[in-house]
Amino acid sequence: NAGVTQTPKFQVLKTGQSMTLQCAQDMNHEYMSWYRQDPGMGLRLIHYSVGAGITDQGEVPNGYNVSRSTTEDFPLRLLSAAPSQTSVYFCASSYGQTLNTEAFFGQGTRLTVV
Amino acid sequence: GIQVEQSPPDLILQEGANSTLRCNFSDSVNNLQWFHQNPWGQLINLFYIPSGTKQNGRLSATTVATERYSLLYISSSQTTDSGVYFCAVQIKAAGNKLTFGGGTRVLVKP
Image (tube, rainbow over all chains, first blue to last red; front, side):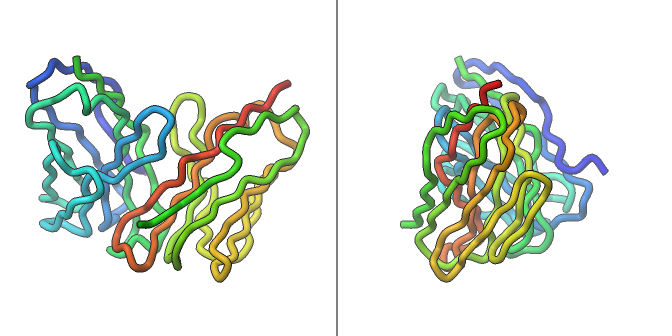
């Protein structure tokens, strides 16, 4: 099993550009989520999903869109990148829909917006 | 709002020393996990421990849910233990999200 796989690992964008961060898991987990980590801080939740076709907002959703068309994939879209979105992004998944089981994280995507 | 507080914020250890990291949380939890973020940024699961005690090698953890705290013990520390340790909780009343503490940055010197 690969676990949670994020691509790309590194990305540089210009202000105003769009891009999609990919996240895939092969553990048949229903719950998937995106976090961002800024220097010296813990992780903050952007969006999450409890199953295909269901998504909801976290703490810091502005500027990001998500969709969940399959159980395996949960892409994060930046429609118009801003320097404030420079961060490290982590995708996570866990079994079930209520997050009362262990969460597993991908290796992260380091995004710089110039 | 939900509060997850970790202490100490920074810890410098001599190789071979023992240490205790603490996580206090403000409400009842369904989920509590400890993670180690290594110097390359990878988040490694250490323990899933909403209550009770677990041990894995030189590491162990205890959560006292009724008193709203968890402790992570590192024994005989090694330089590879360096990094940031995060506690993350799912508060029962707050829905489907993990809330992270600010972390404890650990440096183990040879």
